[in-house]
Amino acid sequence: MRDSFATALGALAACAASPAAAAAVAALKPSSPKRKAASKLRDNALHRCLVAPLAAACADRPSPAAAASLRTAFAGAWLSFLTCSASLPDATDAALVAAALRGLSAPALAPPGSPPSSILHAAACVLFAVRKGLADTLSEAGQRCMLEALVTEATTLSHASSSAEAENATGDAVVGSVVRLTTLLVGALGEIPAPLRMRTEALLSSLVGKVTSSTQLEVARTMRVLAATEPAAPLRAMQAALAAVGAAHSRVSPPSLSALRGSGNAVEAPASSAAAAAAADVARLHGHSTLLGFFVAGAHSLPLGVPHAAHVQTLDQTHALLNDRHPAAREAGWMLAAALLQVAP
Image 1 (cartoon, rainbow, N blue to C red):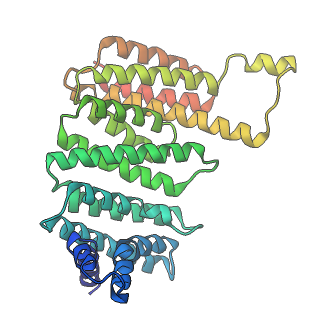
Image 2 (tube, one colour):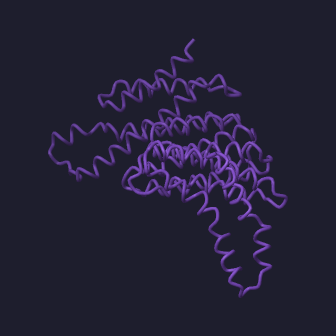
Image 3 (cartoon, helix red, strand yellow):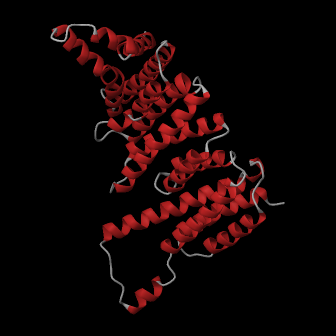
């Protein structure tokens, strides 16, 4: 019963948002109250039927079990909406992609205080609907259009997360969904135009040090799938990751720290800002180490593999990290050591 109501709700939202409904509303008299009511209903149909209820279900009211069941139902509603919208004769790829992005951004509207696990569940529900109802059925041109829109959306989210002072579970859930869908599209397309590939590489390289560990793994996986589309991409990505790991390592454990403490001339920063800066440096170190480890461990799956010089440089960086006294540096070193052992003869 619940699934049937969800399917009907998605179909009604698709009909209300269709161009045919817009033409029917435009045919009414401009001063007619019926036209005003229909315009208001049509303009807010997607938000009122699918976006706002899904976001509200992240608050776990009236109970966590009931809210989880409701979020699952809205996954079916979103799937029905996208399927019905794509079957319309006047449907365009741009309109479908715009609707999918609104769905992926729905968890960002979750009420304050919503549990992070509920937000992640809502993001996973929408991701399933978008993947099954749209991404797998689009043409190559539509998939490329969707990839461009996802890169733009992820860039906006990246700037928003870099300006936020506290960890935002909502934004991280949305970023994770966008990155997972990007992985799917990159693998499906196989060949990506050079400007779009460079934009995606730059975005993922900057994003890997700003998100949680679970999303870091997805970013690294996307980067490796993207590298398979161009022979020179793995070496370029590994060199950038090596440079980023070295820079983050120097900030996490600066060589002159003990000297500054001994001299008594160090200028102490406020505790809150110093802790936030240290946490950001550790996140960058672990993120770029994860990315580098993915390339080293997956060298056999790349078209031309990985140059031997890159393995040597990774080994040197691993040695430096393992010999450091900072726990975060040693943890990053063990990640790289595990990756190197997977490809050792």
